[in-house]
Image (cartoon, rainbow, N blue to C red):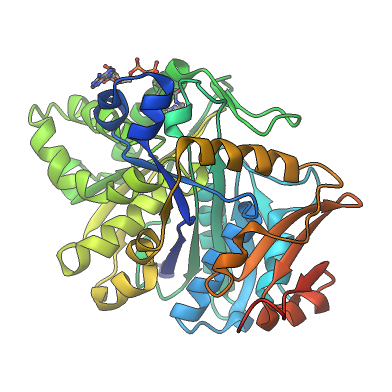
Amino acid sequence: MQMQPKVGIESISVHVPRYFVDLKTLAAANDVDPGKYYHGLGVRRMAVVAPDEDPVTMAVEAARALIERNKLDGGRIGLLVVGTESGVDGAKPIAAYVHGLVGLSGECRTFDAKHACYSGTAALRMAADWCAVHGTQHRNKALVIATDIARYDEGSAGEPTQGAGAVAMLVGDEPHVLELDLRNEAVFSREVMDFWRPNYRSSAMVDGKTSISSYLSALKNTYLTHRAASGFGWDDYEYLLFHVPFPKMAYKAFRVLCGLERNDNADDQFDLRSGPALWANRELGNIYSGSLYLSLAGLLEKGGRKVEGARIGLFSYGSGCCAEFFTGRLGTDSKNWADKIGIGAGLDRRTELTYEQYLAFRKNGNALACDGSYTGDPQGAAFGRLRKVFYCGIRDHRRMYFVNDNVAQVARNSGIETRSRRSSVAV
Ligand code: COA
């Protein structure tokens, strides 16, 4: 019998946007009891992007951090897939910008995967299958990035479940972070109108209650299918991780599984098996395609040795809808996880916004999405020493990015329009 190759996540890194709004601030502005947001939804703070950050800059920041912190050889990367539902162009993928701004080899497939919040998992699963086939070649590593800005209308029920962030993962045959079980997978698709973003809108539309019931029925379906096919039962999972549009959703999901398994100790079990993975989701809010992987990163960053070698179950849901339940085993080399993932460090650098500043960021961000909005003067200049790449608006229907000098050459070589800020940025 042929041996199944080992494949999975070798390293993982999270980009935390530099601004946030406390949900108490939003509750006061919306005249809502803060307990609803803090306890009813389980969110504490939501990450907010500056007008000069976009899904491309977040993806680049996450990828560059991954490469630098792990001293990766970018020349080994033969596949770059970006999972996103915040596409910035109808044709050109975010992956193309990232490829140029990070400076990857020309011998690299690049494309985006889209299916709402499932897109990160679509990208990961595709990359894992690709790695299983390309295992013996030199360029046998895949870079998977989930990057999104979760945005709903001001004052809407979805507004407290906003967020932003990016998760970058190197996928290959040395899965120090998570070895995936490729043999057993359970997927479920059904067309449903629960969440969507028409091309002419920057904010998503959502039928929140329908999305919750669709999520839970897809969970039941995939969990039972997986259990029947794999033979894995409740006691085989030390941790259960879920797609987290808001942390209370993970609790709802966990309770559903307890019901299926006739386990009446849901609260205690949740605190042991899922709760430890949610702290970062409470701080960033929904990051759509990356939210399941933000949970995974959070579990690793705080769990350390305690979670080494644990078998975990993962549930991914994307509205529209497509869902998957799959499993894997965590690596056993936890000593570098905390330094390399970067959530805690990113949170430490954040700046809190007032409600008025949050509204101004939204307004300026929307303005920068219009042609002719190119400013050449990114607001993030004050953070120039920390940030690598800035989005500056659109000129002649082209997105413009400022990059720090050390990456400018790479970007110029790849034909991306950029201007380096030699005068104001020390590198
Ligand atoms: N203190 C504590 N809890 C409170 C509260 C208070 N003062 N006021 C309300 N709550 C609880 C409610 O009981 C409810 O809990 P439950 O879900 O356990 O019943 C929770 O807070 C949410 O209240 P609800 O009235 O249902 O909120 P809503 O109608 O404003 O909308 C969502 C909630 C999630 C539907 C909405 O935020 C949304 O549409 N989000 C985006 C879509 C999404 O994330 N979908 C998930 C699947 S992908």
